[in-house]
Image 1 (cartoon, rainbow, N blue to C red):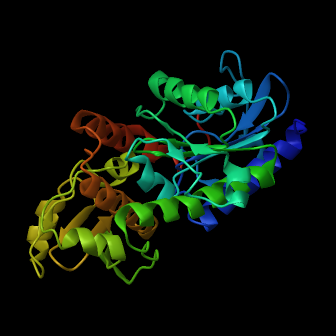
Image 2 (image 1 turned 60 degrees about the horizontal axis):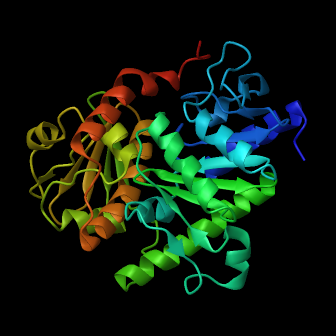
Length: 341
């Protein structure tokens, strides 16, 4: 059953805080919606911090033509949510996450049959297959078409991986959508571990942060970042959110390199590997630096899998466009009180 409009708005705000708290998204990435009728849903606005949202910021959107009420612009992924509601009449809550293991697994571009990969409870929640929608850049018709095709083809699947991007989690209600997201992560960790033949490393950080000349610097010494730093080479993004927030290439410099060398290697990005010693993140403030750390570790987890399995990273043109769009527009929306249409 669809939600009443105001209840839907309150639940969407609550969901945003839960996603951030549990590390299923970082900053303003991801988006959340709730059905309010057979023709409308409410969805999070574009590029806004989840911690500051009010009910008035949650946008009423029409499924048929993606038009919306008011002057707050809805998420750029509104088309993906509309397709989920149109194709699945029983779905009343949708969350698009950038969760760690599921995002990493998406780089393979495979459909994962769960017969031997998940137990009966997990299959009841997720369905028999976790499909992966083909790659499409953020907010594009191609992405919407690819996700729509996966939802339609795998009609009992409650989660769809979005290649090099994240996941879409469906539920009959708020609790059901989150049950899908958490179960997807549990199963994705098991699949990841089975493919590589090793246990998934805990998402733990040893960070030393300090302000440096108007910026905030963090030494990241977490499992997959350290693993990639040992390669001693540059890394191109396997996940598009890394391209957005950190740049199109993460270079590697010798350990104990000078500040000048580190800054030159970072360039206009926000991160650099230190050979055998993790990475340094340098961002405009602590909030952004922490977000880069979260995304970098997840992206390194994806890169380990991608490199091992011989799949390519996000293509350079798409990565460059993602970075440019983030720097020029998307990142600025977060601190604005309201986004005009």
